[in-house]
Length: 449
Ligand SMILES: *Cc1c(COP(=O)(O)O)cnc(C)c1O
Image 1 (tube, rainbow, N blue to C red):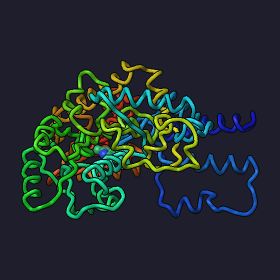
Image 2 (cartoon, rainbow, N blue to C red):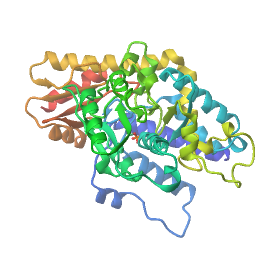
Image 3 (tube, rainbow, N blue to C red):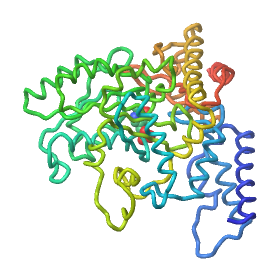
Image 4 (tube, protein in one colour):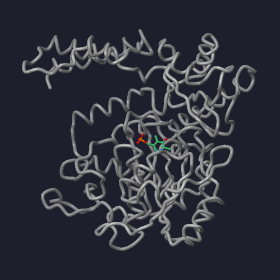
């Protein structure tokens, strides 16, 4: 890395900031346009510095802008300087988070963070790790549950008719992970939800009883803290009450989206009972606006992480105790330092700052819902404590509205469905959003409508 390289970095970062200021929603074009306009061919000959700079700048110019105030798509967005810088540092340093030998105090940094998160979840004893996304932390939970269910599963494979439970509104990774885990998608029971999209614990109990009567093996329940569409929070306490009768069933809380309420004194009630779960996952890259991907899982069963993920490897684990070699509890082998960016944010703003980010999302969403409710041209679809605003404007189909706003470079916002309704789904995920950004969304919609 030379001074010249650092100058290039500065130049490119400035270019990104200029592009964002100029076109907060990038122009949208079909692939054929970019294949023609951009230099994407790889060739034998090297590009010189100036050409390379141009290639990169062209690419950066055209990429969708997720960090501006016009981006409300699922389920990440915004840019906070400190975590973005910390993430670049992680790339510069390039440590792999599997051994103390190659990551040194970064291991301790990660552990300090994981411990504090587990404490907030309510675990007295805990162990945790990071994985490349919430789908993968959910996968780890499913594997720990599967392998704990009966001795030998991790070595010899699953027993037939293992079944698991998740709500109709839960994330699609649960089905995909059941396929990965050899359980099969058909073994995932979809538990009914109430009108607000929360799991119905009585339906859960009924399904479990039916499965046991049929000779099946229930082993895993996934509760969602913040469903992907409505951001509904399943009632963890009541689900745990049901599971008191079935001690062999593992309770995981998928808090990828909403788990960050653990930093808010006002909203932590939404995950009340989390200390009764067996594992808990959270994506600070969603509500807290840390760069992708920042995905954490903690469990109260340290031995379960070892049972499912530890493999002896003399070539790798040559020094230090297991506690200092988190490669022994990882999904993968080499693992990038995803923790540093969150650690840096946490240090920079403190618990108070994280709480403020969470509370502001809820307050902005409430402002949005109040606006929608007060204006007869809108229909509101959900009004509980949540970080999303789901609505329709006049009788314009949500799909049409969202794609027109996007194509015309106005706003990036998505739509979702619940039961028979499809609606615009305005998501609060960008920590830089302020009240006038929300107002701007409605102004724009009305101008277009
Ligand atoms: C986003 C999300 C996931 C998946 O997380 P990725 O990091 O995108 O893999 C899982 N569960 C819920 C509830 C989510 O919102």
